[in-house]
Image (cartoon, helix red, strand yellow):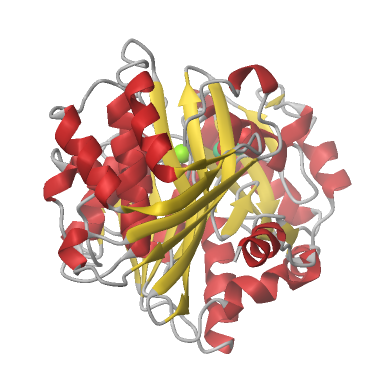
Amino acid sequence: MLILLIALHRSKFPPGLVTGRIMDRFASSPRLMIVSDLDHTMVDHHDPGNLSILRFNALWEAKYRQDSLLVFSTGRSPTLYKQLRREKPMLTPDITIMSVGTEITYGNDMVQDEGWIEFLNQKWDKQIVSEETSKFSELTMQSETEQRQHKASFHVKKENAQEVMKTLSERLAKRGLDIKIIYSGGMDLDILPKGAGKGQALAYLHKKLKEKGILPKNTLACGDSGNDAELFTIPDVHGVMVKNAQEELLQWHAENAKNNPKIIHANERCAAGIIEAIGHFKLGPNISSRDVTDLSDAKLDHFDPAYEVVKFFLFFERWRRAEVENHEVYLSNLKSVCSPSGVFVHPSGVQQSLHVCIDKLKDCCGDKKEEQYRVWVDQVFPSQIDSDTWLVKFQKWEQTGAEQQGCLTTVIVSSKGVKPTEGLTWLHVHQTWMEGTTKNSRNDWFF
Ligand code: GLC
Ligand code: MG
């Protein structure tokens, strides 16, 4: 069993297969495709506890990850996107669209869609864009990282934006380019090939998925600013403008989509607005485990390994934050769902009985009370390995303050001899450090 586990734990697919792998995950249409902007939509920069994104994460991993598609669509370049991932508790999307719909990548290895790049080369010449933009004193160039093959980005004051956009697009058209100018966040001006943009990138993905016979049953687009407007124009897409949406997006909506019942302006900020939209459009479950106060009451009528994993690590966070009452009851419940012969392989390599590890949890009860401590799981994928056993692979992350640590985790659970309401029995847990986890933070890693 252990050898099989190590082999599965380590297995990696060649990067070339990644695009295929994402699509191959689906024998039939994904239930839901969420296409979400990041800054001020999925990520709330005014929520220091990151609660709304963590609520979304728990919902997605427990209820959607296996049969749905998560797509992030951001204005950020790959450099700034990766930076955001290190700062915030973000899930790993199946598909990442960056640089305002000019770069599409697949999977954890972020393999580029070469077809999209080729398509965007039509009637595009960055040299001409540079020549023409340099004639405007109102435009200041954004940082080098944000200048991309198919995106030139500037800052411009609100009061000058409309005039500059009009004149610039006339001049670029005269020089034979087919371009699009987008204004976002009341300060950013992006120049892209006409066929690019977040909306066009989504339409391209829809076409690709349709050709493979796996067009998602529903798509929900989520955004807050100007560059997100196009997402809401793609046929059959539900849309949510989060509560904190920017003026330019609300104005676009008032002028172009006011009577479209498929687009809502949420009452909630950021990721909480996304959850609200899932409920509003009845796209599937919309209760996050994070909204359930007493997790021991949250029982199911069927076996659900992903849900159990989400629930366990949420309990673990609450335990260390001193948010759990009835310690003894909780610990004895936990013990009762762990096999007496169950083993935990700690990322340090030390092996211990699961029961001993549960006893040791007393040592960390409430130890993170005063800290910004959060736990989340990412890419929870269960696979059934025989009639009553599942192998669940995922990444488990912890963040204390600004520091993140993660472990690749494999769990084996069994339904032998138990009822669904009792929960699955944990037989084996095995963890290895994710790259980038620093040594000094490894001492207080319990699970
Ligand atoms: C992100 C990008 C920036 C772009 C803006 C609006 O902030 O980093 O280059 O202008 O999104 O699309
Ligand atoms: Mg945004």
